Amino acid sequence: MKLTNIGTEFISISESNMYDHELMDIPRVHLIKLGFFDPTESKVRQVIRNFPKTNRFVIEDNIRIYNFILRSTSKKYYVSNPEGSDIISFFRKNNKVLVNFHTIDDYEKAFLLSDKVFQDVLKNTEVIHIDKNIFDEKMEVLENWRGNVIVSDGSSI
Image (cartoon, rainbow, N blue to C red):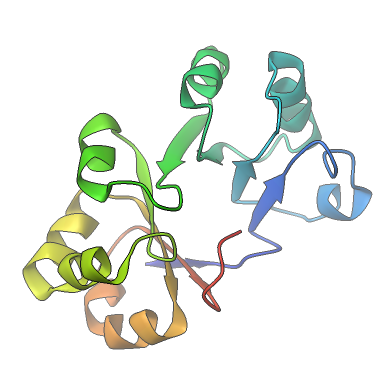
């Protein structure tokens, strides 16, 4: 498992901060969440120029637009489940996913965290976003997983 820290290795870029020099000065940003209100090819390409070492992106909405833009690059992207999404249909629609446990309801969270289901989720996912309690509870399983774990205080980035 690789721990990914919010604010240094995982950041969110939108129209308001895409030229923020403090963010661009971070030595190695591992994941960038693209959160443009109005995504365009020029904005996404500008982010790629601003962060040339970053090869992995997270998208949550405007999936068709980002897919069209990113498929012509060598960059990898994950679709994150948005707040209030139907988690089962979300999994069926998307290949590369970032499972954000902060945006699912308690019933779905309990189901996904049950032992066998959680292991299956990890087999089919490269990145998860969880809180410290889940991280502590699942540490033994996560230690042997080859994916990325983003641990936060319960909020989404």
